[in-house]
Image 1: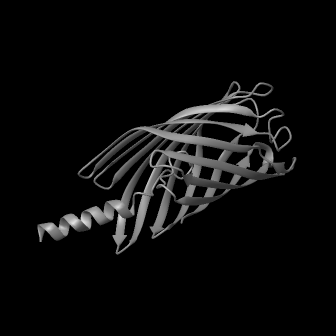
Image 2: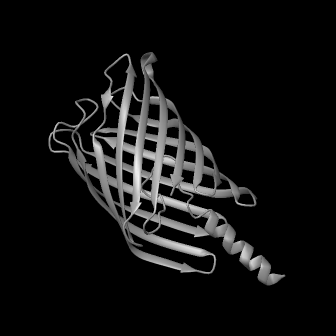
Length: 240
């Protein structure tokens, strides 16, 4: 019986290993030769009755066990305001430390990439940018922590900093399906403007697929331009 329980525990851990934070894709797990499609829709309500809708598509490809490539393209609608494409973001993620023993896993990874200018200001940067960052993940007994810190240098636009911390917990499991609860802190700095969000969410995961929903709540704002009071996020992730 103990052997059966051990096998079931390992199956459970493996089946939820694709879990990650909802509002960042930097820590999206991927195996060698696998591809993940992350389709994310985000509605934001800003001050002065300004509405913003962003659709993003991210492709993640596992080149090697420790190396993944990520590419993101987004289109933004603003009412009132300008609509258009965001810059294409291309990143490489290299896992330089990984430890996996019993029901515990720990990893550190570095990010390096850039922004390819396809959008126009204010939706894109005139000359793109270079980004670098770190990603941390930890899993143990049905819990997972994701954290990332990313800095983007733009020669002719505001530099940006972003930091995310996500706590993921298995809420319920049924055969090969899981319900996961997520709580995140999402911080961003654009130039001299700082915004912090608390983001509760839920994930329904089954073989090869995840359906995610989250609400971002603005809890601290030192921004000189209109920022979202809240955001509603919906995402579909498919690994194949």
